[in-house]
Image (cartoon, rainbow, N blue to C red; front, top):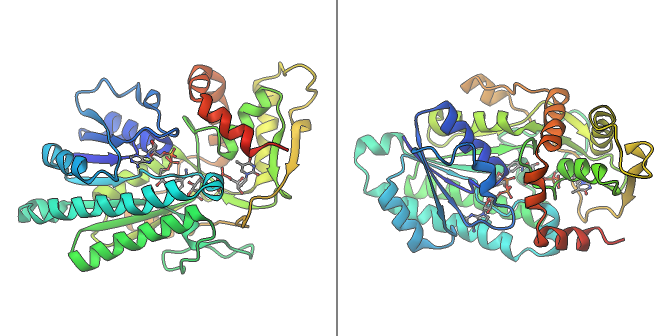
Length: 355
Ligand code: NAD
Ligand code: DAU
């Protein structure tokens, strides 16, 4: 099969490509603009494969996309390209509207024209898989309720509103134009090659450098953490097995308060990196409560029973096993870390965490 993946140089997209190239016989075309979040170094283990191709292309460029569809002839689209960081969307939302909404619209239009010209056999298996987030559902305030596939959309941030818009566009293209679409809404991912603007890699790297560990507000917000390789397996399953029109929630069954996540990382570092930076007695002493995120969602928690029931997927990692692998990976891959901490990265961190 030919699988066109957008955003394949990002955190989750690169995990999906590594999974497909190492575990299947499919061909991949990675279409990525290479924004600050895109990094081809996350793909070095598979980019030498004859089944892998890359095109540096903006998904808002309809002409370029049309050409790629005509030459690669995809059987499946897995659409991950997006602006993905909530704090950046609060600071400046324009790129989120452009890529997440307009970019998705362009991709849908190109896919629709391409699909209309397929023969009946190709049409039967064609899928446009839109990779989305649990943040479209807003947040939960109780302790036991869960997001299901029928929870109403009430996004809180410019990021989640842009993702909700793109979900609506995808469903509309399915219903109105008959484009075969599937959507997945996933909880927080963590793991290898995670860009260090997000909570878990930021905390690991700040701790190793003896810098403050910033906790927004009281740190009691809850996220449901999923190891990225479990997500990659789920996405491939949905893209290749799900019926037209289906939606699946994907989650890790690993709800944690932010403050507890940070404490777990500090404890692991005590064991795995006992030689601390100068002046640091315990990593946890670096924990610093800072100004809360505007509109901060309180709790996300996923009911992932539908994907387990219908497609047989369950996460393999617990948070305990996945976070240990993640901390070990960051300790062993300082070169990757050094290379992503470019001028743009430093600029963002200085602006975001100035006291
Ligand atoms: P990421 O920010 O790490 O990567 C995004 C990728 O998209 C980058 O490689 C970037 O270069 C590319 N990109 C951005 N704008 C583009 C454009 N206009 N044209 C082409 N490429 C462009 O994101 P991620 O964390 O890997 O998330 C991937 C997808 O999964 C996103 O759609 C996100 O909304 C969704 N998601 C993420 C999480 C999570 O926890 N990270 C959870 C659920 C869903
Ligand atoms: O739920 C899925 C979403 O998870 C994805 O759709 C997003 O693309 C992804 O970025 C992630 O969003 P979050 O906002 O939940 O992730 P982040 O790592 O930015 O923050 C996790 C929690 O930690 C959140 O409650 C905010 C808090 N936080 C974050 C940072 C960066 C802090 O307390 N301090 C920080 O410095």
